[in-house]
Amino acid sequence: MTESTFTPEAAIAHLRARGVVPPDADATARSLGGGVSNHVHQVTWDDDCLVVKRPLPNLAVDDDWPADVDRVHNEAAAIRTYGAVLDDAGVAARVPRVVSETGDPDHVVAIECAPDGAGMWKAELLDGRVDAGVAAVVGEVLGVVHDATATDDAVRERFASKRPFDQLRVDPYHRTTAERNPDVADAIHDEIRRLLDTSRTLVHGDYSPKNVLVDRANGTTPWILDFEVAHWGDPAFDTAFMLNHLYIKSIHNHAQHDAYADAADRFWTAYDAAVGWDIERETVAELAVLMLARVDGKSPVEYVDGTVANALRRVAKRTLRGDAETLAAFAGLAREEAAAL
Image 1 (tube, rainbow, N blue to C red):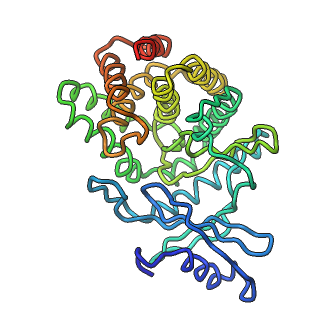
Image 2 (cartoon, helix red, strand yellow; image 1 turned 135 degrees about the vertical axis):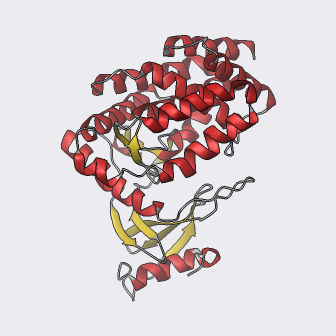
């Protein structure tokens, strides 16, 4: 099975060969897109539904962006870890269950589908529907997992490799952005060194609104998705990654800036209450790099135009030059730019 042949029909055939889909079941499949890094298909039959993922060896962006396909197994392991922690903690959040995992040469993972009607939190936020309650739960989830896994030797050993993180985050985000912004390159490289030298807990690596589905039929239960960049590293990367998306939207949709800023504050407050450390300054430093990276890195935010992009650059670069070391100060810079648009 080659990269080009992993069609929706190939996903059904794969599950039949694995004995997951019964031979006599009338199965159907459709592509879910998968963003830039995976083939993702939804396979349904009878009353069952699975999401089938197969990673791309070179991500679908304009720039060259290779990555090892065995990251899908890293994702399966992280799903199981998150699930166990959240079950033990009794947090009102879910992760999908891993149903099937196939190694070399296919590298395919099948996970359970989220409930019908569960919607992407990113879509809600872009529509201007800003639910700060979701932000608080998502912050609590991250804090609980970070705090619980920080003392787990087995988790540390399983996720010790930072290779997927380097391939999918540090190189395309940080190093590329430093190359394209020589005026702040030294500050970015300082942050790269700090980031890679920090090993404290299990880091999700892609903790963003696009990877949160909100099940409105069951209150505001979030489903947390996409763990392929999971690694043992710096918890400030995850906090900064989520805050970055909220602050970018606060400038993009500047008429509702205060709502997004409140959601960011609720996220941070819930996270901070769940962990036993203070990483505010580290979060701000990483937040500045990530904001600039989503304009000038290999994966720019698709909904940002030139005016907003320049506003984001100004916030990021002022922070990198020392104008903000706290989240309150960073929020103030974002508020200034939003008000000027």
